[in-house]
Amino acid sequence: MALIVQKFGGTSVGSVKRIAQVADKIKKFQDAGNHLVVVLSAMSGETNRLLNLAKAISGDEQPLPRELDVILSTGEQVTIALLAIALNKRSVPAVSYTGSQVSILTDSAYTKARILRIDDRKIRTDLQAGRVVVVAGFQGMDEQGNITTLGRGGSDTTGVALAAALKADECQIYTDVDGVYTTDPRVVSAAQRMDKITFEEMLEMASLGSKVLQIRAVEFAGKYSVPLRVLHSFKEGPGTLITIDEEESMEQPIISGIAFNRDEAKLTIRGVPDTPGVAFKILGPISGANIEVDMIVQNVSHDNTTDFTFTIHRNEYDAAELILQNTASKISAREVIGDIKIAKVSIVGVGMRSHAGVASRMFEVLAKEGINIQMISTSEIKVSVVIEEKYLELAVRTLHTAFKQDAPVQQCE
Ligand code: ADP
Ligand code: ASP
Ligand code: MG
Image 1 (cartoon, rainbow, N blue to C red):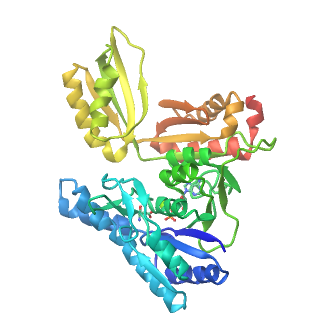
Image 2 (cartoon, rainbow, N blue to C red; image 1 turned 60 degrees about the horizontal axis):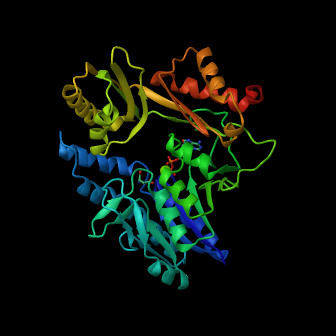
Image 3 (cartoon, protein in one colour; image 1 turned 120 degrees about the horizontal axis):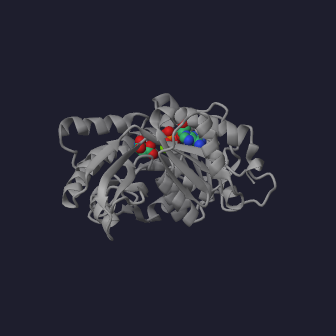
C-alpha cells in the first residue's frame, strides 16, 4: 500500500466543478488502495484578491505582515473544507486541517516563513483509520501560535515537506501543465515536456523564474530525497520526474531549459569612492532591510571611483532605492540611478559542466537579434543575462530555437 502526497494548485481547485473533479480523481486513488494526503492551494486568483484587500485598507502603508498572513491563509481554508465535503459525499472518509491544526511549525518570518518541523502524529492516525487527510497548503504556525505563510507558490513546499515528514512513496504536484517543460509553454509553444530533470537543474530553473515549482519545495525534495513528480491535474500522462541522478548518456542535452523572470529591477550607485569595504557599505543596509540582492557588478575604477550595480525583486525597488540614496549621501557617491524595466533570461543545464562555449553561443544568439546584454552572471550549470524587459519574449524564443529546437550545441565544443 503506497502513501502518496498529492498537491493541487489554484487553477485545479479554481471552481466548485474543478474541486468535484479533484474529488473524483482522489476517489480512484483511494479505491486503488493508496493512503493519501492531499494538499490544496486557494482557488486561483484568491490569494491576489486577499492581498489587494489588505493593500486597499492599508493605503500608503505596507500591510502589517502578521495580519497579512492571517488574511492570506484563509484562501486555502475554503478549498480544503470544500474538498473534504466533496470526498465524504462520495463515501470517501476525509478530514481537512489548516497548517496549524497539523502542527506545521515555522519560523516567524511572516509572508516568507520556513518550515521547521511537522508533527505527523495526527495525520498518521487518520491515515490508519482509512481517512484521506486534506491539508491547507502555504501556511503554518510559529512557536507562539501565530499564523504564518510560506511565500507565493508555497503550497508546493507544504506538499513536499509533508511527503518528507511522512516518508511518502511519492509527492505528486498536480497543476495546469502536464510536466516541466524546456521553457514556459505559455511563452514558447514549441517548448517540450521533459520526462526527467535533475534536482539541481530544477532548483536553478525555479530560482531563475520558472514558477512551476516553488524553489523551497525543490530544495526540500532534494535534501530529503523525496521522489517528486509534476503532472497535469486532469489529463493522464507520466508528467516530469525530478531525479537525483545525472545520466551519463550521449543523448543528454547540454541545455535542459530556459528560465526567465520579469520581476527584477536594477539599481546603480555611481561615482563611489573605491575604498576597501565599499561593497559592504552599499549592500549591508540593503540586506539589513531583508532585501535580497541577486546579481552584482562592480566596475573597474576610474580616478579612484567606481560604479556599483545590483538587481533586486521589483516589489522591493522603492525600499531599496531609498536606502541606496541614503548610503550615497553618506559615502559621497555621485548619484543613484535605477531601472525597473529589466528582465533576466537564463539557460540551465548540467551538461554545461563538460562543454565550453555555451555562454558565448548564448551571447551570439542574442546579438543576432540586436538584444543588448546589461549584466551577466554564470555558475557551473547556468548562464543568466539581464536585458530590457521588452525583448524578453523574443530572447526566450530565439534561445529556445537555438538550444532546444535546432540543437546546434555540438558546435560549441
Ligand atoms: P499552480 O497554481 O498549479 O501551482 P503555477 O501557476 O504556480 O500553478 O505553475 C504552473 C505554471 O508554471 C504553468 O501554467 C506555466 O505557465 C508556468 N511555467 C513556467 N515555467 C515552466 C516550465 N519550464 N514548465 C512548465 N510550466 C512552467
Ligand atoms: N495560494 C498561494 C499563492 O497563490 C500558495 C499557492 O498557491 O501555492 O501563492
Ligand atoms: Mg504554483
